[in-house]
Amino acid sequence: MLCLVSPGRLGKVRAPAAWAVLRDLDVSGFVMEGRFRCTASEENPHRDLVVVFHFQDSLHFGYVHFSARSDQVHNIIGLVNGSDRVKVNLEPAGESVARLVDKAWHRFRVQCDPVSGRVEAFLDDLLQPILTAVDTTLRHGSLGVGSFDDTGCFDELNVELLPGAHGARQRAAVREE
Image (cartoon, rainbow, N blue to C red; front, side):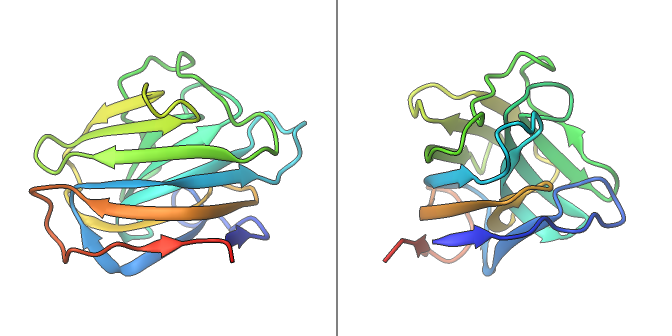
């Protein structure tokens, strides 16, 4: 189990500030799944956890922002490309399904097609994505988990490379003992 015990400090751009990244894993297409729970107060309407992908450095990465709220900057697929994050998912602002409203464990999956750049994010219902995007700005990088500015725990993390993905064939896992 991996737990974020304090929020990160915001850097040069507006982007998730607390994360753990598998730096020795450089992938293009992948499926990452596991479970997480946000430990921030349920009174916080902006509580969040993120899955980071195609991480190249703190100013260049994509992420899925799972939140208790849905708007232009919450519950989005975001891109940090040298400046403040921007929403790249296809769902109109405020219309994605926000499910991170409690301290329960939630199952998630994030998948990225290496050819088309299609990203899909699932939460609890692993058959229907709550967020989708097509973005080819950053084609590869590391994977990780974290939060914009909250605390939480991640467990049972699994990463599988998709056919056509570049990077060494690896399977990374974090499991509770």
